[in-house]
Length: 354
Image (cartoon, rainbow, N blue to C red; front, side, top):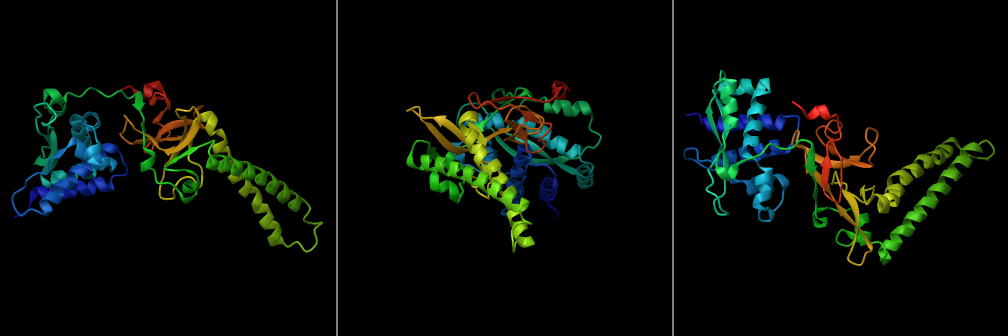
């Protein structure tokens, strides 16, 4: 006998894996359906759902310890109505996906338990299936999305014009070998021995860039006057010019601007090769001394639920750093304020209107 739950969940899992975007809500759906498949795989009995709390889903999505997730944080991040709407839109907006479930005769749905309130009565979420009615009226879908599961589960409409950033702990950032030489536990006091040594290294690299560029330019200009100078040697000297520029542009200048901008993207040699995003923030400790630390500023895009990271403001923005959504870096752009950890939409105002 065919297991309809297994077939439907496998189809949804494959569709999600092949979906060309990677947003937080899609990640939530992947987690829920993967847990249902895992429960079915290790069970020979009738379908018994794997019920997950918001904390579990949020922790798996963020790859952090569940015990460190506050219940209110998880409630604000994992909204059941938004999750249901995302799944419904995912099925209906993709012809291949919708056609597959019509053929199967079933579609996946999100199910939640009614929480009675209190810290011990958590709302649980899981996935089930129901018969696919391709002629379901639009009004019925609207009524379903308007249903509130319980009084404690009321969810307000999200403001698309603002975001709230999160600052990752330095212990969660994977440093490079170069960073480990200077930063202790992800932080560096600028007036310490290592801090002064790093500043001297910056000055040395700056003067070396100037000397290398001047020397290379003179060699190329006077190559006809230099005896026994081969073409490959002249080419080698010419390469030194862009090398000096890259060192000045992506190593010296970011660190030079750090005391003024207070937050910069981690320059080359500072970010681990296995990390695709890292920032350096400068703050003042209790002694009013500058301290640089490795961190990462991220936010959830309210428009598409993708991950927003700090990126260069140019060429379309005036600010040095802005928050850009990974899924739509030029359309979903927000300001960045490290003091309030807030950001405002920087695109065309009418873009957020229906």
